Length: 364
Image 1 (cartoon, helix red, strand yellow):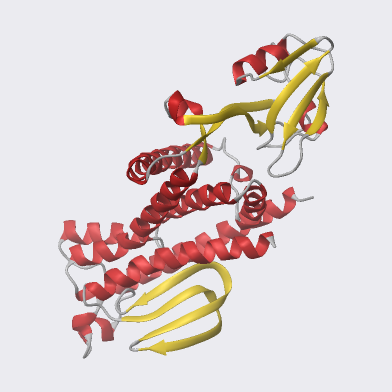
Image 2 (cartoon, rainbow, N blue to C red; image 1 turned 120 degrees about the horizontal axis):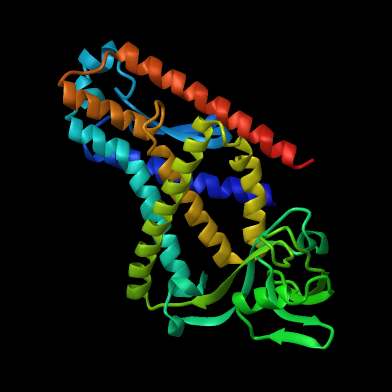
């Protein structure tokens, strides 16, 4: 069921992305030969007007085949060359190349705004206290082989009550929980927690020193999470701010990862591929529809940022070609552009295969 849900989410996000390219190309008078979801081999297709619509077997991408996107003799000087992307003004080409990313960002904004209208779990640090309801401590990280990990605690667990001997803690925040754990080093602490929609359960942990600084700890990261709900016009504005905040965070994280890989200090195990995302989708679904909505928005923004990288075969790479052509005031030779895009595509598929293989290894 989780795999089906992942494929459905990915298909929707790809549909949104490719729809951006498709509508922009149509609006600017370009010929679109095919609109495809997934990568070949083809499962089935139908033709409406001049465009063929296809569903393909490999659900890890999608494409819009715009006439002249990969320039050849026909698109440059053929009978229908006036509708070729390569013969359109460079500003029009740039709009088409950017439209998919823009649509993914807009879609994420809409999802986040819907979540804020319905009531979305958020960190209390991001909003005024009067906007937060039912705040509680939620685990946002659990270290492997730590006391928390060994007790069965997981990311997303809501901590409701703590007890150790005659001491107890309730209606607390993350700082108070951290202090309680630190003050009961080497002693058993019973935690009452709630996971998603399941009933509450107990876990027993014994804080140890040396895993986080010099104080006693159980190997968790936590945050104060509450429900935020706004009127539609406020939700749209707050959703827009959250969307651009997420974009900034993802861009910073991506540059940090690339820098660490270039310096030789990075590790591809930090990157999550399709198999890993399937597990994350399952976790989000377990906690409810709003969590799944938020996660879908997050993936949509990730797709937008990744597609913006100026690397051949990605939208950012094609946009870079357009910028270079604008600077040198002539077209890049088709054989060069097509070869670079092909090499870029092969490298991306190789990277995806490596990340997927690493995800599979993590399962064992």
